[in-house]
Length: 224
Image (cartoon, rainbow, N blue to C red; front, side):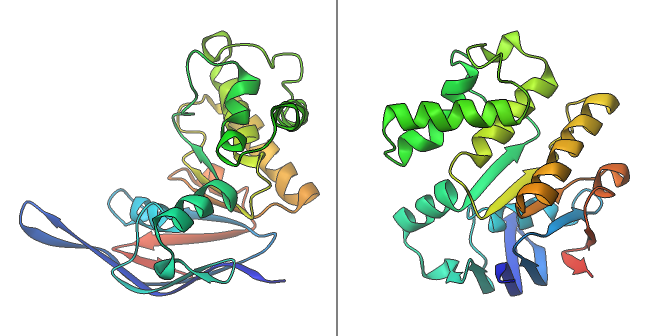
């Protein structure tokens, strides 16, 4: 297997009200292709900062981040944007769907930026919505879908560019217990059956238990 993620002594410091806050204090992490990893930890431990760096939404102050073998610090803004769109699929707690846009059009959005032809965009998006159990609701708007169904749309959107990595940030945070279990079963299936690499951030132990490897963030450090 090859490494999708390699972090080497990654550090990040923020200035907060004139005070330096060390969010990450030398994080090392390797995630191989096909792994399912959960990262837990208390509020303020550095989980969100780590997720931003993994998602190329922020850059480390020191250390190295290799994404699919590419040194992220060496990428310009356009290359970073391309990495976010093509290499990484994001699933957030708040779904982040376009309110006046149908499920299938929401899923198509990353393909628009990738300049994929309209017919191919629709085919791939409808196929993925069927894969996540929403084949009969592809033309529904987000407000016509339950929270769990909206998250399934978000997962389909994350998958549509065939990314090397899915980053899921508290993906069940807005869902009830039963719906959370259904969404985690879907992640399990995507990982086991399709071999998709998943890194999940959560504060809920029962959600983290679905992962094959569990790590804990404390005070800006990752405990292996």
